[in-house]
Length: 338
Image (cartoon, rainbow, N blue to C red):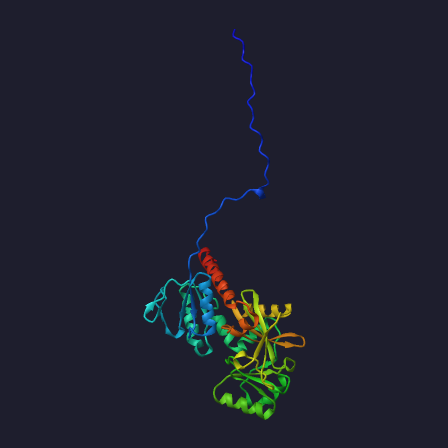
């Protein structure tokens, strides 16, 4: 019997030193190219500061801006096929709309915004929310329901009892506002009862709706503008009336803006106000009361030239980033059926 061969052990390869996972370089992933989106800005004038800045910001983010004059948009209704024409050309391939609807074209502007929504195109500020913000009394009703503080306000059509209405807002002096005024237009201060009666009678005879509002003396001709984008305040300034005795601090009326860091109570009030009215982008105006912020009004198409200059913040960039994220969220919601 042949002798058995002795077993030989195979030489093992030397063990590799263990390497922690964090030290292993991940394999490079192919870069994903973002699809270029078309962002519509509804604006009467391309040369306006806010419109120009939004166009710049959209381009900086690598997307395509399309400025449409709201009044040149033609709406076509057909069963299950709403369409829109612009100067005779059908509008297609839009990913998201940023409305900049001026007060003078509110009715037609709301119809255009609604039509984009009917076409399944995400709109940053919806028509219903814009309408709420434009009607000062309706807006304040929603804010009051949300528990936010504001100057005492009265609306009535009974001109025979003006003295009682004056008492309800805390006496004289008081503020008289047009329901749909903007940029400080249609806002007056009355110091005597005959003055109140004359202003009220004049506007009612002209068919204008007005509100009487408490004069917050401690504000001293200044207010706070906070610009809300999504769920945060991206910039804020204190606006001060330039002329002595002027109580309106709007930048359009010569007011000066200084950047400020808002206390948490003001940030919370501004964000809550925008959310309550349903606006993704909003300018929220507040008075600095002795007990904290007092809401004045909300602007659904806030100008931000003064705010960018005062704060140095890229407000247009924040708006565009929100609009792009909003469009993606809307598309996901539509696909998933939520």
